[in-house]
Length: 229
Image (cartoon, rainbow, N blue to C red):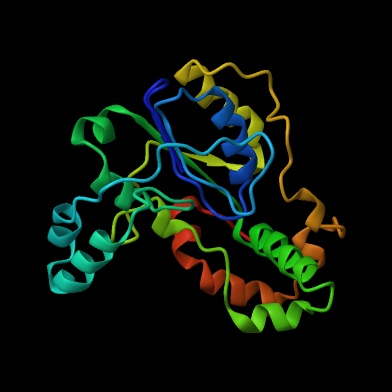
């Protein structure tokens, strides 16, 4: 997650959508007072800063009054005010109203089936190549993102633009031009790209049954963006 006072934007990082590469690129352009959350493990060229601080519990308590004590305890015990993959609605509660309403808010989303395949390859690589696709799918722990850029109902977007991963550089070029961020058509880094050695498209990998399973898991994102298998 990045909040730039210099360029007046808020970037909401989603899972398996080139978020790390975008963060590394943006961190190099951000000013010293901007908020840049850490990446774990750290990536060369990325400079986190200003993400710690006191959390005002009142906005989050008002959003979930039934969870008064747990929300109060959570906010008072945390020293990390902003963090990686932070949902937009939490950012909204922790920044001034004029910043939220006046800054350009954007994120990236990706075809669910392609995203799942990329996610599988990452976990398989971390498991030393021993994780089968069926084992991964059986876990049911998928890179679902919709809650990171919608309201609590999951039906209404609360960001200004959702960039399509399938047209990433062209759409980022439009966003960066709007924000007046220097951009030469490349992010200059492809973080986590090496996890995937099998470059077959997802339609050649997933069976119809597997495709249906993934479709059910990502029903909200499919409704929001019109993705199809």
